[in-house]
Length: 394
Ligand SMILES: C[S@@+](CC[C@H](N)C(=O)[O-])C[C@H]1O[C@@H](n2cnc3c(N)ncnc32)[C@H](O)[C@@H]1O
Figure (cartoon, rainbow, N blue to C red):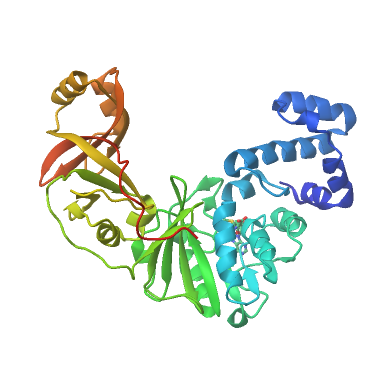
């Protein structure tokens, strides 16, 4: 977005024009919306208003209801999920420190911090984004470079969420983030306390031992690996977090290293936040289960158990893997694979579904994996017995 458009949107005239738009415009397709707005406004104003309406709609689709904000397409793409931002903000608020968000973008995290009662300063390099962030968050937003923060980090909780786009495309190389990952770590280390947001796929080697690590998931999506350091953080601690329930498991919990290449009556599939935080052994202990293989995250047991950070299944039947054999078994039992899960297995679920062809009957879950060097398919149904154990929702 050009800075002039951002400045107009953030101005009183822009705000009043946006607020004055009738509800009848929602749900119109882009061409219909542009036509309607051009009947009332000059072309540039109509384009600016139309863009905001379309981006608000996209924000609602991505995140559900959100406080009304001013957006850019790229800023919305990079914005922290509001549930994750609120959780982070609550933790920062617990420190009782003022906070600086050194890469504040449109202010997703910054707004959550301000909403949690934290005194905030936002820093943003890109001009239009900084203007909109200033309008979105009633705290102060300065245009500047995170690498040269306009504040004393030793007195503050800092937040760094580096840009992961280059030339309009996502980059997965931490050295190409903005600021680069190494610089982000220096900023985190020099602050009194702080949080650095990394992508879900961040290599564990990029997480230094002086940081605490959280793998944060919303629903089925792993959203980020968060590094915490300084005051309030425990170096080396790993935690899995599942939102919106607020379920947690961390590396202080008892662990079980039991491995047995045998499928018992129950099968457990840990949530991604558990595997990314390296907490499969802690989950195994909480469930009273064993690992099928030291390299694979599936767990099994002969007794029913539940944990909010794992899917739990009752195993109906297990067969050595082979498409023909599997198809014949499913047909004979009247089972239809409603869901196919796999770990350490070379066939993609969609390809397997195509190979199995059309099947009718009772919905089951097919779990494909390798146990003791042999490929197996377990036909399962969601476990119904057992009470949740382990972590508590917060
Ligand atoms: C991932 S976004 C932040 C999103 C934000 N956490 C939110 O929830 O809205 C990263 C932002 O950092 C900005 N940025 C990148 N490099 C920067 C730097 N060196 N100094 C300040 N801001 C920077 C980008 O322009 C982008 O807006």
